Image 1 (spheres, rainbow, N blue to C red):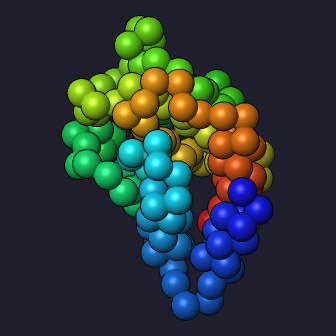
Image 2 (cartoon, rainbow, N blue to C red; image 1 turned 30 degrees about the horizontal axis):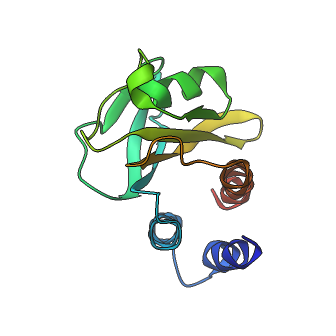
Length: 149
């Protein structure tokens, strides 16, 4: 994981790319390096509205380009301000289905100046794939992303 962190840091610190490009490169790197990350993307607070808007992502297209606060796992994280790991999406009553292949999901909030401004959302086609190491990596990543937004 330390090698992956170095590569993620170099993307975020690159002076050649704007924030959107950096986030897209982060999605691609995670998608390439972690085999059970099957959809990797960002959602951000949509202005003053209590909703999230889709940002850069890698994976199958999604109809969920706007998610109201409280709806689905992403909407719940926008309200709870806490990382949410779902080992099996079929056990979760508030799950918004993006793909019939999705079996598990992890969503980690991004905080800037104490405010929840967005999140990274990862879907997996494997039941219960996410480790404590994954969670720590993603929480670290979200802290690093907050520094460049």
